Amino acid sequence: MTPPRARVHVVEAKPEAVALAGLAPVHYREGFALDTDARLSAEEWARLILEGAPRLARAKMLLAWTLLGVDLAPLRSPNQVLGWRIQHNTPDTIVLSTRATAGVTARLILHIAPATNLPADPASVVGAASPSPYLFAGPPAGGAVEPAGDVHVAGAARLTHVMLVRYDRGLGRHLWTRFAPAHRRFYVGLLARAGDVAR
Image (cartoon, rainbow, N blue to C red; front, top):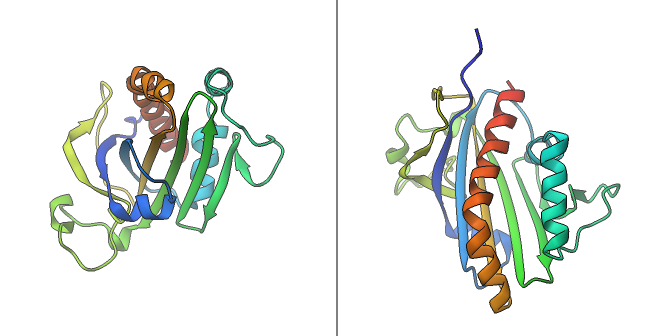
């Protein structure tokens, strides 16, 4: 029997994530969350999601970034994840950064929170003073992204993803506005796949 795929929630990026990313102004933001039993660091998650993606998916990402003029770091450098430069790195949080000549600057933040900080009810974290899995992304907004057949099972930890984009030129705004919906679907697939692989 095939196990159910990991479910990816849509969440809201919080000011803490924006502050850590050091990107201003922010014109676009997205957030996703994944419950998992895997015990990986934030960097290990980033590498599993991006570098551990299927070869065709990696090729698509690198091609799209090249066409946008993204200034990718050398892929053999230890200070990068699939060309995105590591800006901040701790066991529970990693910030990746990149800039494209097409006119966008982006930050990718991955944060992993242990089960001891997971609320029984996502709404219970609102206004909480203690650390929570929503430190970098708030409770689900408007439901969840659920590919067909997904089943949600609470895990030992919650991985949150926040992506922030600044438009540096009008062309960047135009391109990203058209590209963002496909990007979200593509990345949700990568995140769900990583959640499955990490089980």
